[in-house]
Length: 344
Image (cartoon, rainbow, N blue to C red; front, side, top):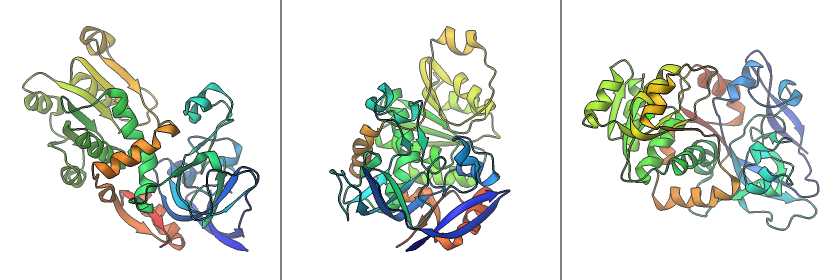
C-alpha cells in the first residue's frame, strides 16, 4: 500500500511522491490526515535552509507539516490511550520522555527533541506516524481545520498571553498580523482585553478588525504617537511582537507604561535596545515565548470552543495535497495568509 507525500528536494522545488504507508511501531499511532496547516517556518525547508532540525531536515526527503490533525487509523503495540477512529491534533516536539523538560510538558526544550515535519515526517502526506504521547484529543465540536490551526498559531499565542496574564484590565498591542498575530487578536478578545493591532498591510488590518481588534494602526503612521493617543498618554499594559522586526520590537518596548509586559514571538537575529530607558526605568518585564506545554492543549481547545473564537477566519486558502506546488508558491509570495491542506 502506498500514499502520496510532499517533499522539498531544494531550491523551492516541491514534489509529491508515492511512498509506502508506514506501519506504527511500539507506542506509536498511524494517523490518516484530515488537515495540515502551512507555517512560515516551512519556507525554510522550501528554500533548503531549515530553521530547526538536524541532518534529516536538510536531506530533502522529510515530509513537512508540523500543524496536522487527523483520525487514528492504526495503533501499535502498547498503545492504550487511543484507538482507531479517535480524532487528534499532533504536538510538534518529540522528546526523550525522561528529562525534566519532557516531564514538565515543554518537550521542545528536551536536548534530544525532534521536530515533526523537520526531523521526522510530518502531516503533508496522506498518513503520518507519531508517538501516542504526542497525540492531543480534539473535542467533538472542533473541526479538523480548526484543530490544525489550534496548535502552533492559536496555542502559541494563548500560552504567551497566559504568561503575560492578559485580562479585561489590559490594553494589549500586537505587532505583525500574519496568522500568529491574528490568532493573538482573537485570544486577547477572548480574554477581554482592549486590542491595538499594528501592521504595514491594510488588508491585514481589515482582517484584524473582523477578528475583534478595537484599534488598528498602519505601520507607516507614527505608531508610538497613535498608541499614546489611544491610551491617553499612559502607554499600553502589554505588547506582543509577532513580526520579528527590530523596529517593531523597539516600538513595542517604547509603547509600554511603567510595569508593562512584553512577549517576543516573531523570530529575529539581532536587536539593539536601550536598557535604561526601555527596561530599567520603567521596570518592564520582557519574555520570549515559543509554543506551549502539551498538557495545556485541552485548555486551549476548550477556550477556542467556549469563547467561540473565529479561527476559520485566519485561513485564507485551502488546498488539496496534489496542489502542494501551488500552495507553497502562493504562500511564499504572500498571496495567502494561513493556508491549510484538507482531505475531506
